[in-house]
Each structure stands twice: as C-alpha cells, then as structure tokens.
Amino acid sequence: MSAAREAVALPVLFLTVALLGGVSPGPPVAFVPPPLFALVLAVLLMAVLFRSGVLIPARLVDGSRSALANANGVVVIVTLYAATAQAFHLLTPSSGLPLLLFDGFLLVLLINTFVTSPDRVELLRSLMVIFGSGFVLKFIILASLSDPAGGRLKRALLLLVEGATLGTLTQEPMPPSVGYIAFFTLLLFLVGVWALPAAPPRHHSRAMTRS
Image (cartoon, rainbow, N blue to C red; front, side, top):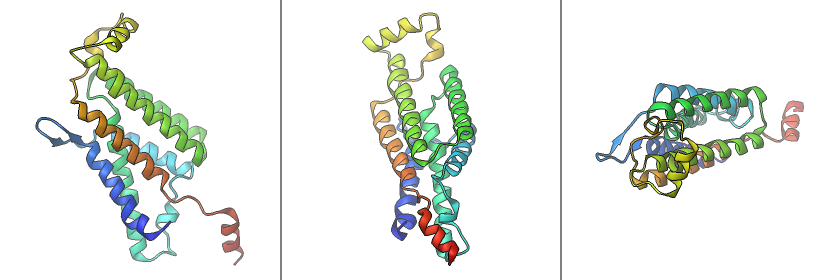
C-alpha cells in the first residue's frame, strides 16, 4: 500500500464517514455520536474483518516499520473503527420496534459471518449486500411508511403489515437530503474497506521467510 493512501487517503475517507454518519440535518444541524450498541456492532465487524483477512494489523503496525509509519497505521485502525460505528448508527432506525429489529438482525448476521469466516472477496460482497439492504429498508421502505403524505408504496406496505400497529413501525419523517447523504456515506465506507491493504502474495511471503 502506498504511503499516501495510508497516511492521507484512508484516514480522511474514514473520518469523512464518521462525521457524515453523525450529521443530523435538523433543523438545527447537529452531530449525533453513535449509540453504545453501534459500538458493539463495530467491534464485531472489526473482528470479522480481521478474521477474513480484510483488516491485517501487521500491514499497518509492525516492528519492521518506522515509528511514523506505525503511527499512521494506528490512525487508520482508529478511524476505521469510528467510521464503522457511525455506519451502523446511520443504518439503524432511531427508536421503537424497527430499532430493535434492525439491531437484532445485524447482531445475528455479524455473529454468523464471524463463525463462517468468509475470505476477503466473499466478505466484501457480503458487506455490500448488508449495507445495501439496510439502506433500502431504512431510507426507502421505513421512510415510505413514515411519510405523512403516503403513496402507493406506503399503501402496499400497510397491506403487508396489516396486523401490526402503524405507530410501532414508523419513525419521525426525515428530510429528503438524509437519504442522499446516507448513500454517499455508506458508499465511501465500502470503498475505504475495500482499499485496506490486502495480504501479500504467498510467493512474496515465502521468499521473505526463506531469506
């Protein structure tokens, strides 16, 4: 991995995700830190990234690297964790039954992914599905249910959940800009995870071992 990517690109990208993920457009505009459960989910995803070879701490912090390079590596790991927590915060509803369902679903999904231990490519594909599905559920389906004006999608969804109380499924209406900010933020997060340094080729590591 190039020094520019490690020292500048990845920290700036992850910091951008952490900041945008906590922005509440308002009014008034405010920054909302991630809840405690988002921190727990972030720890689980970091463990999954490590187990699947997406996050390799030795490529970022190692005795063979200089002190400055190790400091850069620590910054990447810390900002990655902050961005992960805010990404989960962004995906989960604010309160009520949807929050409970989303948190439970994500927790079970991450534990299952950790146990199955997919490889790097499989995990990156899974993350695209997880975050993409979460975005659709919150910012399209749930937002449609919560829209006071309603529409065809809302009427169709209400027919599907006819036995449920609408108040348990809806959230406070969100400004249209929130969905666009969320889409851009989650896309940045996935790009940043994809750009993390991969494991060196096997022939390269064997040559280093022999030498």
